[in-house]
Length: 389
Image 1 (cartoon, rainbow, N blue to C red):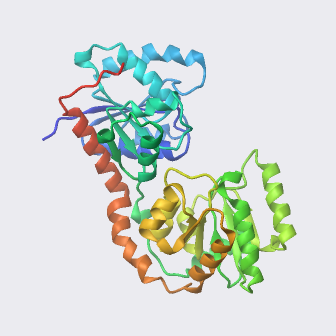
Image 2: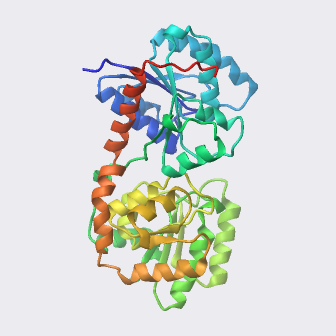
Image 3: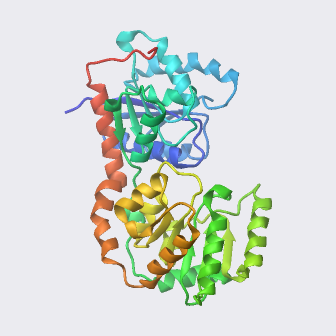
């Protein structure tokens, strides 16, 4: 039986977001597998959930962009020695630098192994290059792997491991389409989303990068076609985004679709939002490292329409090619949306065929087991890499 490991994950804070979610999920998997899981961060609202899983949290402010953060190198080094850490897993750039420097001061014979996960497509720089210094580098998609090799050509491709982010299929169950009960519930909360026509869903933060304006233009075209289409954009309305929301509302009014659009705060029932919808939009103007929305939507059984770039394009090409459109081609977007909505209520055979691959490759369990396998591989690899390299 493999020996129990002590794995220390480093990130700025345990507040919210994809990095934090992955940290929680891996900590939980480590504990359930009999290992010791330690997370080092500045803290945040997710710490109680982390501790409830049996993992430990040590509060060190290793993610604040300040020269003063270098003072955390010594406390982190002492923590790693005291905990007899086997593996240090950095998930963000500044924590990776602090972890790398902390490891430099430990004796080579007792130095933990160092690995990183590249969660995003950060601007190439010497600062970002620290994420390629791990003895193993996890890439959250093939897109990220290609990006790393393109911008950091000195990186040894043999140490890269592609491990896609995963979802719990039970949290995103396949259901009827259309789901009249889910749609009625949503319409009861947001009157603009009532009616019998198709509901488009674009979940995402209130930033231009998420493509809200493209969604509004698409809705206007669909309604001009005679479809009683509606659009819900949960997550766009958030503190500090009033000016941007005002722009979107003004644009919706100018297009004559204001009464068919709901721009709301984030929903805590995103699976139900997918179930209520007929077409999910992923129109990020900037390529994303992964496309969790694609996986969640397809798990519920809803078609997805998105631009053919980044992790979203990668997933759509593999799992639902009918929903991928050349970036920013609004005519093709309209044409593709019409084609997908014409099949409303009759789930395409192609979509049904993606389910086995979805469960096998993009499940939370698969992601957790693949990551634990990398830990085991690294812990038992007799070769060493000096963190000063």
